[in-house]
Length: 160
Image 1 (cartoon, helix red, strand yellow):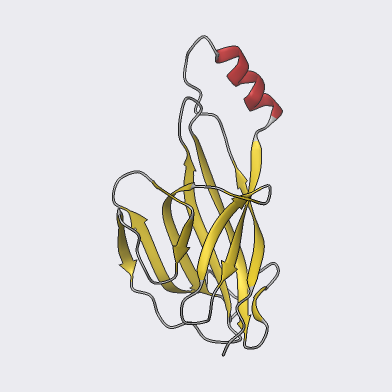
Image 2 (cartoon, rainbow, N blue to C red):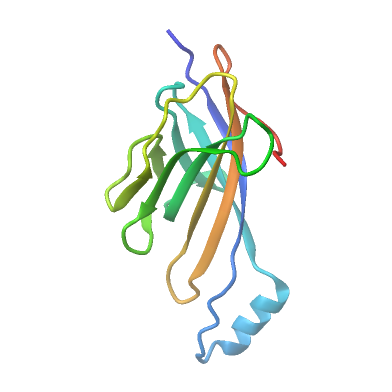
């Protein structure tokens, strides 16, 4: 029986206010000039054949509004890597707290069917999404990971 592990990977996400012209314009300008960012993390759990990503902020589970996600094989260390799975929201973004590899959630279309993952290969997950509401913002981020049997999912560090 394989040991289940969870790996939290920092996924820095830059947020920028939408710049709507309202009575809050001065506040928006202040926020834009001061810079606005937050960090989400992605916890990877499960086995090689069906990893699951869950999203967190400040260590707590959150719902993330996701527009697209792609997973690439980065084992060659050059270029963008080989695409192994890609999904896109059918309309805007879809709010979720977790996502299983190879299973397009309701409201998503599979752009590239999931290929089997392999032990010892570096993978990069990259997502686009955002926040909703008065100060809607775009978000983008990614993480690299590798699966080692007996040790589960681990961070693969920075990939150039």
